[in-house]
Image 1: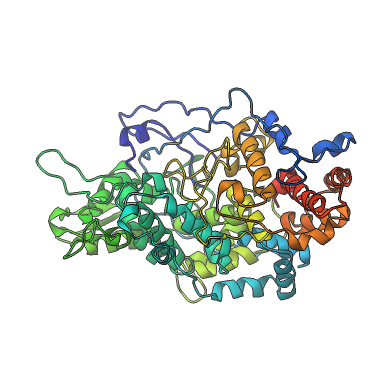
Image 2: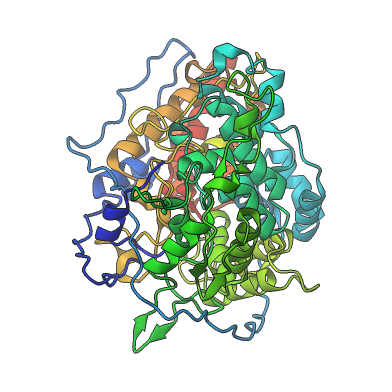
Length: 626
């Protein structure tokens, strides 16, 4: 996906781990004001408050569910007449900054432990952070094990079947699928909804939102295989070294096509220049970020202003490194099979810029080969002091909370810098530190703790909690990106390299903005997407055969014995889905609505369970993960 360098230099984007800030223009480059961004509106909040009737003391009406008792669906929730879509952010070229990298400050002192007792609610909360969802039995098992033992068990689990292997096993290597990409979604949902190595899969999803490619932007033969291989790379390196992950991502055909590094060549007399797209984004989004950071992730200020991490000359110098890479070639390798789409790109020496290349204070000497130049460049990026806090903060945001304290970021970043055995970038150690930190294990210890549950995670949690299966074994659920009729989000389907939302997004005109807090997921919470989520989940939850016309089927059998007791039913759902976050008023509202529903027959009891699930998943106290 080719970014427009001129546009990127014209509009500033927020730093990846800080609220939006003005970015100084490079000499001779004009800056335009930032386009307005939309947050969650009052109308959206009203629609979200599916159990807010308790505030008025009036009982809520239970939704009618399809397929049970012949009752029709209620009128779909509708959004405002003119919902404002979230804007597409573009990346600036950074202003001039000192070439010297920041020095490494001492690791922050550990904080006193204020950890929530590891009861059933705490176990459910851990699973909400580190898995795609769990059953009631899995919540109890995790509680019996303890947080540390559960994390260690997950870190030790072998990898399951890869996505490429699954695609092949399903017959998608047939020539008729050479240009299709829909079945990449099937492979993704199968992994996210069935594999037992849940922590690895959540890490894959988190990394896919930092090192972004998007299926619609993979314009190559066998795009589904290219996308699957990209996620397999994240899977392979999820618990490994960050340096190895970065190299594998850099040379993946999906990334090569998406950010146009594939085919980039040295300058020539016709005016051709190396493509700068990947060089810019690998710094801005994948490694060092826009601003020089202290070890705790806070921007370093000079004369009261942030300092840019790199300048336009660094982008140009690094772009010269990324020349000469293309699809693998050889006898029998062509577009009739997916080999090129799943094999790391190969270097073509004649296309590489062999002159000196300077960036971030490092100069690669004239005559250095392409592979050697790449190794020096990646070593330089990974060694930069910004990488630890920059990546650690984003991983915390994706798993635990939107606004981690500087101390939390600093503790995790210190493990990134040194895992205790002198190893930098050990993602296994980073994940363990991140999930077992006192701030992660206590829902109230952090200022502004918690985050909005993104739509994909709400959906996977429902699917895992209620045993969704695929009768055909194909997991034929496509993209859920349509905000009006589905979730408004789907894995590997973001509209740009900047992911579905920016890590530093601040909903304008909100209490969060006044408090200086960010809420990345709110960038995709619009009137349209809120209505779409509720309608889609109502249809999915009520499905009697397959999910919303797709090849997925939920199973509520183990919940039916609770249907006769609304209090017991809602109490268990509160635990499994919301880690007991629903307050007394919300619980009373849902119980009151369910009690008004008949439950004399099996069909009526099933309808009550489905209604209970939908009402809980519509509650604001569920939607905000603490």
